[in-house]
Image (cartoon, rainbow, N blue to C red; front, side, top):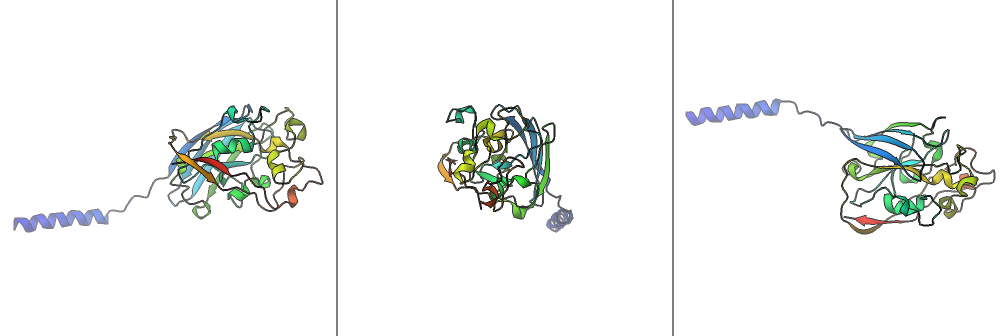
Length: 261
């Protein structure tokens, strides 16, 4: 009889547990502090929030950027254990005083997600400046977007702490715009066979890693090249009328060599 009473009590407790609604998974956020690159004086803060439905919410607030100008921005890094990080000025291998996109990519990695304001967010949209956020007249930039889980690369949410943010666009000659007088033509654009694109428009301005993200010991690996989409257009007023920018099908980045855990 005692055994039967005990069995009944256990069964009753189990039934109560199974009948209790399961709490929804809480949204998880990581924070990114954006620090200047190339002595831009720009800075900012970002929050990446993994929503319980698998979507990713991104919020960025930056200041000190080139005013009234579009700023290409991306999540960089990897979901395969590669150890990427923000570069310092030692990455300026050609000694011109600025870290170019090509010089920075071995440190911060290929584009993982293009942080466009609308449409495609794949790395092919990395230089879709017509869909990138524009800083206001004071150089402040605000960006908010939620990207559906179906549009995220595999492993984005699981490896959110391994990703970081890079914003592009510098003003080397202090005239509050991108032009050829600052740093000449973009070597990134030239490598894609394009002319008349200012280097200022493609050099990185800020970079930020997830707060408290560890760096791992890793082995070398190469990531595939990134491209920009067909019909990508340059910032308004930065390219001459005969520029092939809008007629070129895509930009190509050089493969990135990094370490993978």
